[in-house]
Image (tube, rainbow, N blue to C red; front, side, top):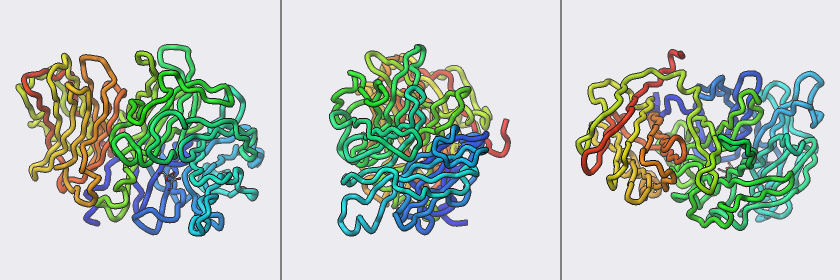
Amino acid sequence: VAADEIFRPNFHFTPQENWMNDPNGMFYLNGTYHLFFQYYPEGNVWGPMHWGHATSKDMVTWEELPIALEPDEFGYIFSGSAVVDVDNTSGFGDGTTPPVVAIFTYHDPKGEAEGRIDYQSQAIAYSLDEGKTWTKYEANPVIANPDIKDFRDPKVIWDEQNQQWLMALATVDRNLFYGSPNLKDWELLSEFGEATGAHDGVWECPDFFPMKVENSEEIKWVLIQSLNPGGFNGGSGTQYFVGDFNGKEFKVDPSMENLPEKHDHWIDYGKDNYAGVTWSNIPDSDGRKLFMGWMSNWLYAQEVPTETWRSSMTVARELTLKKVGDTYRIFSMPVEELDTYKEALFQVDQLMVKTSAEIAPEVEKDLTRAEIKFEIPNLKQTNYEFSLSNLEGEILKFGYKHSKKQFYINREESGIIDFNDEFAGTISYGPRTSKSDTLSVLMILDRTSIELFYDKGETLMTEIFFPEKPYTSFSVKGEGDFELKNIEINQFNFEKKN
Ligand code: FRU
């Protein structure tokens, strides 16, 4: 067993070997969730991109399959999406099986080396065996490069309202929207983004879709927009915009027009959730918006202390859209499928903390596959700090600075950090937008990651860490006495499903 297996996640998807980045082409079909991913099968750093492939029945446990798409004379296979062409609008079907169509970016390394700017174009491929094998379209590209250097990551949906295939495509500082009747012929509809949001980097990996606003009949369109660098805490990050779409143009809600760089509409404020997008072809009877991101950051992804493989994905999450005050916010929570693996370990309704306390020291718990939940009512102290630690003195500190309405994560003493100065050089923070005087905290813990869902999914922080030994204790600390409510520690058991 390689020494780095101590860092291998217990339940977050990671390839057996070699380099992975963005999730790609996620679709659901016949009871199976498909995940493709940017993959370099010959090394543990980024290289000529392929689409790796994995499947799952529940978005929790994954099986890795053979590579789905390989580079060819037109270039590397960059990020993109996949749709199930139920009505065979593309004509790729054989009359019985609806084709699955992948839409991706060709990145031509020769053009790049020659100093050209037109080396990225959009192409398609189809599969008649549920994504196992693919045939590239003979008339690729379907969208040629219009002399724009960064021109990539097509995300396509079936736009039911306007009866069209709709593509969001990222370029430098904006998104281009294209429409198509058949996935082959694309027409530029409009563009969006230059005037609002964070721009200290290149826009990449968009996702654009309608969502029902919770507790209303209102439908709004959501644009998820990754950018790198220029993320909220530096490096890679994912912001979002909410507005209306008339079949051609996206009009952002007035509350999100002219957002400054440091705005408060981000999918996640941790450093490690990037390029996330949603699954396609989820049945109406389910109706969920299901999301997954790459759990790393271009600042240091290629240097993290795993050698056999590099990077994992976040847990799958369900997104919901809520009206909050005079704006709209995306909430994320882990998918409920994760609950089927849960075993209750510890539960207490109320705990009075005398300045600080270790939670459930007497309970034998494996914090490399656990869920911890609690609430803090009557917020009034300046700072509430939580920590995960081991007997070696490695400690991950995170918490909520109530005086500044800020969440934070501090990786300085979390374990191995010296592989890159950016990894622990700054403390990450995220603004708390909820006005509730009760803070609810839910954390999903794996061997090398924490996913924090605050305020029932209103603010998230996802980060990775590399302790030499697993963390074994969880503590809370304030400046005086405070109360914790509804504490629960649950263990994920992947041997036995409920
Ligand atoms: C985002 C990204 C995409 C691109 C891919 C290449 O992480 O830079 O824009 O398609 O990675 O692997």
